[in-house]
Length: 101
Image 1: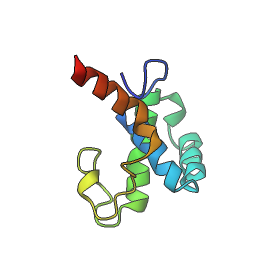
Image 2: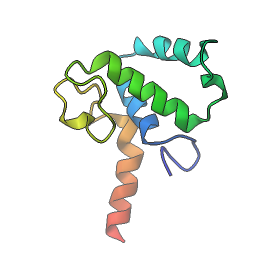
Image 3: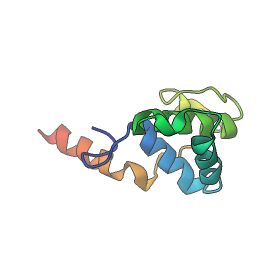
Image 4: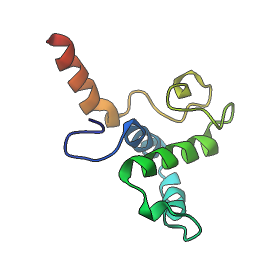
C-alpha cells in the first residue's frame, strides 16, 4: 500500500523521506542508529525501521512535542515534515484517482 506498490514500507517511510529532504544531515544519524550493534534494528522489516526512523527524527526536531506521532505531527509548531514534499506526490496522485472512481 504505502509508500508504493513496488516499495516496502509505511506512511512513516514517506514522512522520513520528506524530513530528510529538508534535513539531509539527519540521514547519517538515522543510519548509525539503524546499524547500532546495541539494537536489534538490523533484524527489523522496512515498516518497523521506518517507524523507528520517523519517531527518532521527530524526537530530534520537533521541539514543542518530541513524542508526536504521525497523526499529530501536522499540528505542531516545529513540524519537521514539509507537506509539499515530492515524497507525497505518488500518494496524492493515487488519492486523486481514487476520488474520481
